[in-house]
Length: 401
Image 1 (cartoon, rainbow, N blue to C red):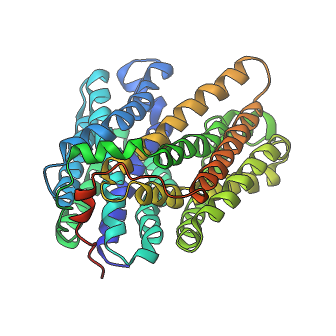
Image 2 (cartoon, rainbow, N blue to C red):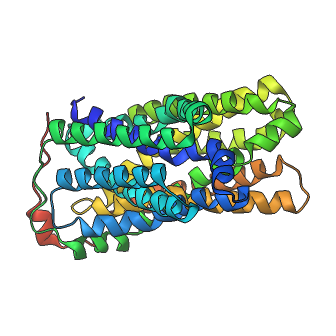
């Protein structure tokens, strides 16, 4: 794997850390600014909304410059957002900083996926995408617990300063290691938008929303589920989330490896197993050891779908994949928001803290159905490509190393 993928993974590590570390620092942030915990929760919601809106917006704005330069600009935006959060004098300024940082998230992973895929031979594309996403998964194992520990001991402002420094490291790595690959000739914004007329692209994005939504239906409410149902102490939740992160790391690498060999079968297995495990979590959540094992499996199976789904979008939007790739990253966050809302509804309805697991199982099963439908449509014959033929003919072959 090229060293350029390491630079992308470092950027992904910083982004993953800033996205999730705020959850462990909400009490400190709320106390410093004199706001309630629910109000401080807008720092999480605002970030998620920023990812969904920023993915297409920043990608469209970057269509006229090279992908390497756009990745560098996005890391610059990420640095500015985190520094703004670190020095924020009032809560509103910190919220603005969170949104600014989030605008880089979707476009970075979207454009980064395209670049990672172009750096390697066609049969290694999913593995290259997985290598970049390893930075995001490792962030949940190392970055988030470490950032939380720093925030609790030295102050949350130090945490965001450290995250900004990670952004600087990622920026320097991209500048030094990522080659300035040529843009596809003749591909303009209208070609990028035309990819959304392809039903297979839309099906892949719907699978992303439902599949990863299934994961977050359970994980969003993991703290009350584990403390009230399984009987864990509150301090144990951090280590349970580390188990979840370790599962993510393993699942991501396995998903990337097998997606290059058999993409759709990999989706069938991972989505089907995810639906089954989420359903079983309603039972295993009552036993400490079984609950811990299940949490790791949910992380593994959930992230095993990420490389194949991202590669599926790139393959189906061939010729002009950048915008579709970025929007698919936003689809992950849409799934997170949707599942968290649905999980909250079933808890509010009095169905208990394990009820979100049934929601997650249903969402994952829905993604599996869409995968079967997508494959059936593909077997009926290739659909006409919505991308202008001239653009495809002038497409520059990827550089392989």
